[in-house]
Image (tube, rainbow, N blue to C red; front, side, top):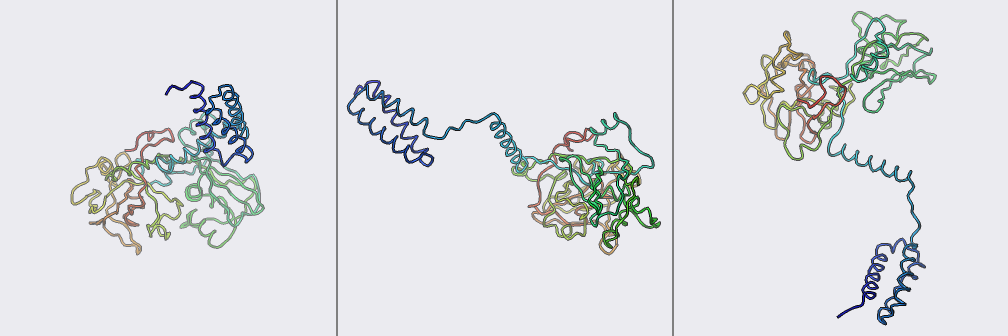
Length: 403
């Protein structure tokens, strides 16, 4: 049947008003609900009477009432910027949790493929000047010549480690009176390589068999404190920042880990790490190594060579490590250490390690100085995070896709 255009428009308006009430009923005040329902009933009556003049009046009233029914919510420019900021954070956290995650390499177990944090003490101030420092920023190099600006006794917890963004770990030196000094080096490098405790304990000479990290352990164990004098040298040397890599957390949802690739895993449920027998000093919950064996592989090392299931490993990463030996390294690679020292101090050959289902073997490229599955056992499947994908910082020869 033919319907005038004003009737069709009125029915469409009624449908829109009804939908508006369904969507916004919980936000509308009771008085507004009653007003809109009353106007809608009047519109129904006008439609049945085909009263075009009344329909036109009611249409205008309904539009105005519905538009003004909810509190005005104009978003300011600041509000829009804040909303964009928080949306960006949510997206970034989602990417970090499920797709890709930045990770700093804390140790030297993957050298020379990837560098951990390294430090070297120097006799003289290594400061290269402004241009040298600027270049050092891009290559991850920090030059230290830290002299105390304060005098007093160190606090019981003298050193705490912190991080500036994700690029620069640093240590705070705490005095008993609350004063602090910032040193741009992690605690381990500060105490082991830059000899902080040797400088801090100037009143007591280190014995010939003592090391700075040993002195640090003694200080922590006995609770003894050091007295620092103003102008006293605390640390001097060069710190090389560890490589920063992107871990692909998405890949293993679609494929299984591949033998020979660099991968990241957590240390949870690896009892010999959690118990503190190995690597507790690094304080890291994520490790990066090369995947030396997949479930049900038999892994063995002989004469610096890696054998998998009785055959010499052919993957490019393994081949690179095996180009050199301990006495004759090539490009920094020394082959694989074929014996490890167990808890009793005995050297135990790595012969025929049999992996079970859902177990992986992690090996460091810096084999003779890497704490890995040869020492603390296989990596459970649930610990595997993803392959190391890209080294994005610093801007050195390691920048690029990880091989």
